[in-house]
Length: 304
Image 1 (cartoon, one colour):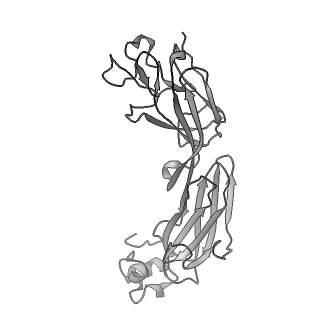
Image 2 (cartoon, rainbow, N blue to C red):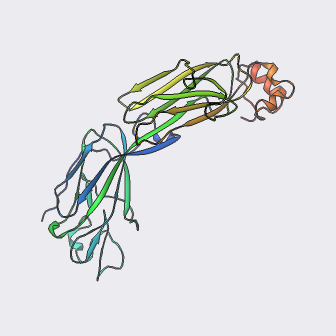
Image 3 (tube, rainbow, N blue to C red):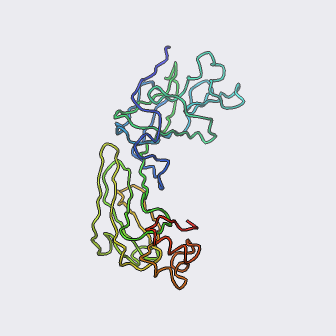
């Protein structure tokens, strides 16, 4: 029988969005669909339509029986009586090609190296179309069992400002973003000396605070961008923590990111060992601290 291959529009590369997943501080894969792919037919099983530009992980697991003492997973097989190990080609059926008994996702049947757990996955970028899955066999009617395909969408976030353990003064920009397949509210706060919940709040939108911030959605990249400006001129010197906590929907993993930074208000914060006690020895000495203030931050701390 002729080989049956479906051609599709999925882009088989990951991290193609404007903000790279590789730089994200917290990545969560949210299960959005489970499919059972029957082994006894080459009729494709279609997934939901994948959002164009959204990042996904597709996993497949399990084995099925293909007749003639053959057991197969998404790409590899073992034939009792002739096989000594699991192989891409089907033992005694090598003339049919390595694609025999493979699970196809559209036109792709490469699931990587053999897994003793019979679990495989790949990361893709959606193209606005469903995925079509089928198991290729020249005589599928004597097969039994299913392969289980699970599709996950990416949900991740990153704090972009201020820099970790940076020393800041005046107006301090707070920045972050969330990538998700739907829009979510956000909780945020800056806390003095701790990242713990409901403790030493300075600004934010939790625990009765209502400070200004922006939360802008870009539907083309599924990105929500956070921005706020903190006027630190009246704050005490020392360490602070920016907490970024987008609200999750049912079934989504919690994302709670933190970023510690320091605030300095003037040269007096450097005196009487303040350069050391207020800033955890980021400054080399009092002169290093004073130089930072005098140059409006151009002369960076020696230990930063």
